Length: 122
Image (cartoon, rainbow, N blue to C red; front, side, top):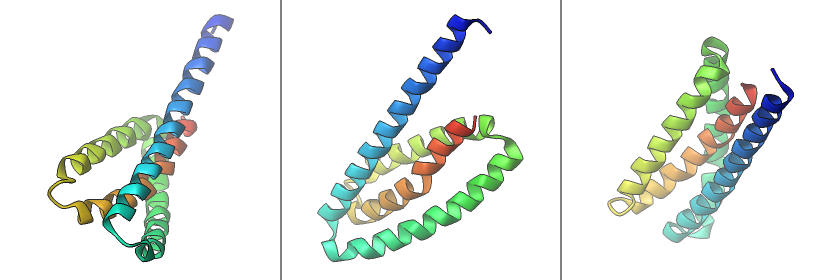
């Protein structure tokens, strides 16, 4: 690998990482704002506890999947699956805003760190 191609790979990786972190921060902001728009602030501790439980379960599940299928196969799959779930949530927001606020809260908890971790595992 040449020095120039190494620099390009590093630049591309850093750019993708910055976009992933920006997306993760934005999704948490939207998640929190939408959740608090649909529910009272007193519901937030329950949502946070549920998110922690879901995050732990998905971390165990995704780590087993990455050990089985390798991060290079799992990372794109997680990106695509998470993106499709975001699209489904945005389409269903007007029909069931309370349910989607809860699902979005858990979705961000489940996929946020898994997507970033799978990328860096590659």
